[in-house]
Image (cartoon, rainbow over all chains, first blue to last red; front, side):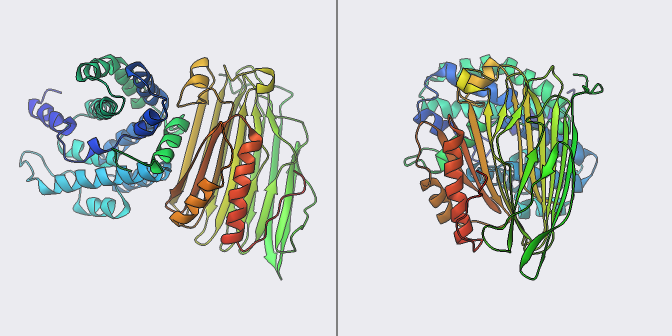
Length: 233
Length: 278
């Protein structure tokens, strides 16, 4: 990315200060910690590594890439199709609602910001309306904002995976609990997994949009019934 | 993986089946079977409205290179239950994938109960199955899939091979449920919390086509009476999914059967009924 201003916008998009409420979700971690299945930093690292290599985030990010490319090609029907597809893969109600809430918040934020005159509007307002009406997944909203901020595709993918990992580690710090330094060490140690996952996801064919997601699905279903919770359902 | 070469011993089986409904009776309007797939004569243990059918795999199991294709169609108002007489075995192969592809179309006010017995995926098996269900508005489908990885009674684990199971339920061009499972066989995935978490059995029960109230989700959760397994229930936008990960295909089936019978009584206006081949 030669464009320094695009790099600055990427920092803004991946910042934990992005007001979409990501910090209020644990994506099953709260249940797993409660069940004693993630007792320490090493177990959390293994969970996050497997999620990147085998799990739902891999499929999610691959669909984000597809939406990004469809927006660039101005193929709005394909964007909507992938959004519906992603919603149908999120069988756990709490994961589906989380994604729609975060997607809605991100699109509303984009609508509320005065566009940079140097960046041409990359999508029609009707696309946003339809996405909001049908329930917009966070991955799709992310692709919308990344294209309109002219952040390049692969860097957008790295940023998406990195902010997901950072958010999961923040949840782990509160839940397990871990020290701040241990959390930062974990994030640093996870970089090779994030990079390897991004390379695989970038080239993933449609027929390989699949995951090994028993753990996440069962944890999210369990969390829906957990008695006392720090994180949203 | 070389998919061009198909071993001589492999099968290209096909079954095309169409159910129609007339004068209070669901009938098989057409049926065409190619070995090793075969359809038993239907039976009607709960009256003429609901046709029970049993699909046989006469070769005793699925081997690498097999291609099984099933097309099942339900015309408006047809009510059918389909099962199998025994567990399906998928044998180890020399990295040659076996494939089963099932396409189900359910018309207006028709309902299919798709309840095959469990599959046993041997270590070093390569298996890919696709189940696509197309519903029109007002149609519903319920089904389960119960899978044992490795012949665990003899200590076998799924340490090599690959299992892919893609299930999709659509209403027109709108996907209602997309479940694309993938388990590459390895010591890591057998142990991983994402994969089998050291359990040999996974199971999924789904009911798709209409929205389900939260009370019913609660009821489905309470129907689980077992222990030493992980289970969960959640709501789709139009439907319900139950998941099981544990040791016992029997425990999974028992729980799913209870939930299924509740659906029968509360939503399908049917009595409890267990297929006689089980």
